[in-house]
Length: 130
Image (tube, rainbow, N blue to C red; front, side):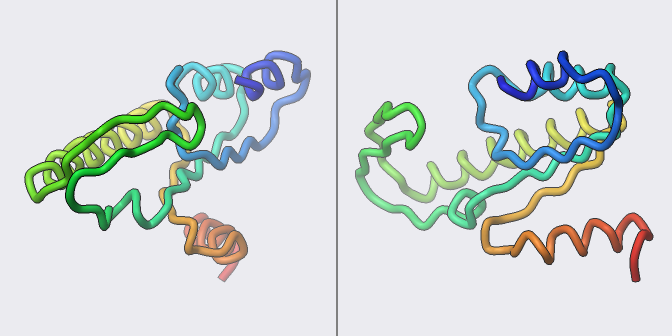
């Protein structure tokens, strides 16, 4: 991950704002731990598409990973959507626990929220602006 190389080369600590979907197959933990070890104040913005939160899929589908091109054949029904929701929620909970445990500020948002609104909300939550 490019962030790891950048952090390793950094001579100064400061604020790190990371905007990511967290879908790196290598995981997110090592890079975030490196940021904390380098004493960066770390703010993780977990960015998701609305469809990732509430998929509107049904039937027999061929899903293609936009980053790898890997395809998988699936049947999407009510049971599959429930399993997806359970796995998604467990993933979110794991991220939240990790961030809390390591002193990383965490915010989950969607692509439908403007960057300006997102930053203003973060500043308000931190008591930095009204």
